[in-house]
Amino acid sequence: MLGSQQPGEADAARRKLLEHLSQHKLSLLDVAARLRDSGTSLAMYGQGAREASLERQLSIARHAKEEAAREASAAIMRVRSLEVEVQQATFEIARVLNTSVRFRVWALAGWAATAIVLIFALGPTLLHLKRSAPQVTQVAPESGRPRVQDETDTIFRVQPGERPGAAAVQDLAIRLGPNDQATIRAFLNRGEPLAILRSERIGLQTWLLVRTATGTGWTRSGDVMQP
Image 1: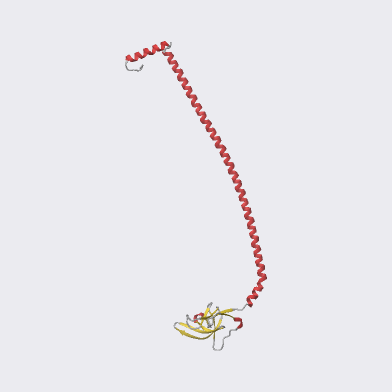
Image 2: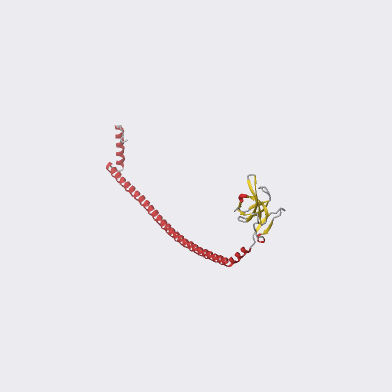
């Protein structure tokens, strides 16, 4: 009301204030001094509260920093411990591998020595058996029953009127007739000797009547080596 724009209201408020102050034996100067002291106290209180808050925040920050430093130190110790364990495990693995490699080398050396001894011990015997083993030729006679004939019992010789020859391919088929559908009576190994009795031109093929150690038969001219 003291700040009212109406002069009457402002004067009435001023008189009321002065009457109230006179009842308490105070003046406007006393009111101003008390207001100044109150403002100073409030300012000091506000400044103290801010300082206390800052100190608490600093204390919390220091505590967090110390805790983080302790955790970092513990983590570094764990990492170093793990590095030591990994290094020890690596050394152990290398030792085991080296031991295994040595065992394998010794085992291979032993097997190689055994194989060499067996070769020297059994070589002459195997060579003798190979030289003395008879050569056999599988024959399918006209009866249709296969048999095995010992070729060492027959020495093949070319007779007068025959021409010498030899099988030019492996498993040369000797047939009962001069065609590819005729029954096969024997097979000759490559290089095996035979005697050529005569040749016949049948269609586009030239067939030879040959005599082998197992009998006579027909075969294609291109499969026979001739002098």
